[in-house]
Length: 328
Image (cartoon, rainbow, N blue to C red; front, top):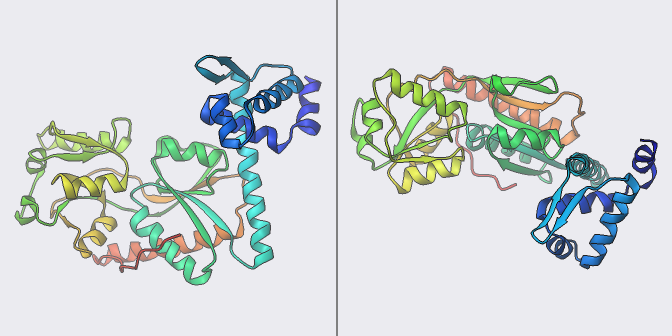
């Protein structure tokens, strides 16, 4: 395999890696050519060039499009990682040259986005107004692969034990129970002691079936002698939960600090009932062997500060202070 080693050391260029990632995204020579603003024959020529360097087929071609071979999938993963690290290094150098903090790429679960992360970004902006924060929402099945490919710097959310791995460094910030929320004018908002039987009589927004939180919610219904209602909306998105709670008069589940803030804003009503789920803490996830850029370090400091404030507010049974939304 000396020729492969030689190709990686001397011959593979960024334009080759960009082509492979684009081909994997579009799975079609014509659409890839259009995206890269080159001709389709040029795309075919560059792909053939890379395959000749490595002595193997990376993409199979057919009338339906292109599909990566097992070797192609491995090289695409490598390409994504290299290009992501290239972007990080470029942003760091530009930040040093301009005196800015640079760009931070954060993956956020819904439990952390509206309060912890939003308030931490506000702190960061107060200290470094020129810092840019790229935020991607999702669950761990979506966010962790992007973290491992260096397309995200840090993931903020629940530290699910099932996703623990030797390459990940995790840090708990605070414990965060769930609450049930409804629209401010919902019938359950007027009930002094709602219970699980009341929830089962209304539309419900729940995580998708593969999420551990979904299993725990179902188990809670069973413990209280109830079944999930037939009218379900399944999503891990914070936006989906708040949208369907508002527009479909559904019951949703959110982290307590999120529910408190939404209620303080007049957007929802937090039901006065215990949502007794065994939940992991809210915290941070990073790759163990990656040195964080200065902007990432600064944002993590802000996350620690905001996490301590949320923990103090929970201990005092007071909602954390509200901040103006920050556009990053």
